[in-house]
Image 1 (cartoon, rainbow, N blue to C red):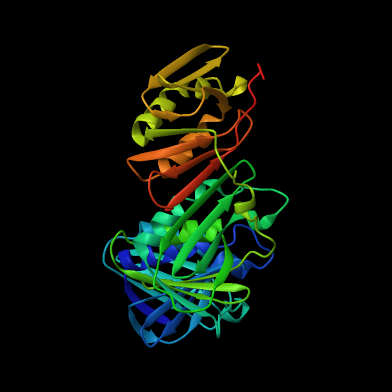
Image 2 (cartoon, rainbow, N blue to C red):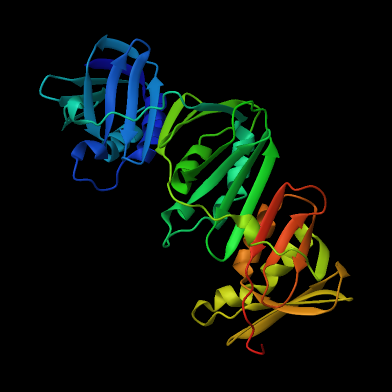
Length: 370
């Protein structure tokens, strides 16, 4: 194999596909990048058995061939090469040479046959979305994904496509995030769970414009096509929480607030708790006709703030984890939102003042006086 490429472009492509490299594996090939010549240039692939990323980098192909190179070392070499063109060759013994300017590197590769084939989706369901929309919806739900737990399915985000509507749901046991948006889709109803790590890597390459990406959903795999990259990911299996059964049927107290004003007050009053990480205690929210009073008290000091809100219902005092409430308000991308309450031990619900664009649920924390 012999290819000649632009250093910067090739280095960027390698860095992007290497997001799917296995950190540690019994198969050395999974810690590498598969380089394979094609009619369009060089195809680069990485795969860690859960997520695979593939792209084609335009370059001059002087000799066809393929080889697997250690991803970390190869990317570091390319990143440090001088600007200009890089020549990469590999012989029949998988001995790889990298040359740019006066710089020259040699390293042993692995036969391409040792690299597992990336899964494919045939006969799946196709969905087309704006990249910016998927990026926004993932950002507004991924913070509520479970990091670990008894149910692995909750380490992903559930996608539901029904009646020209896309809904994303994430849950971690103490909070819930729901984000939905109308889309154009004429196929049958779909429901599947994509690992959070896959979505995190995908949104890093999405654009904030009107360009589109496509999804092909199979029984066990999903394929994303965007910006010249192909992402192949396994889907998570298992029963995902039916969040509609966890929502209260009615509410006794509602508060219409300025989202930014409440977020700023929460961030101020939470400073005391973040400074005293060893002795964290729940923050307190008191709702009354005077508005909303927030306070936080730890062994090293106290903090409080008050802001106006339109309150309907009886006065209420409730405890909460300030980080969970802050995460939800940061994701609530509206000028105003409505907080709904029942009792000091019932979930806090956050919704837009109009429509059903998002819904966030945060479980309260018992105060010592309760």
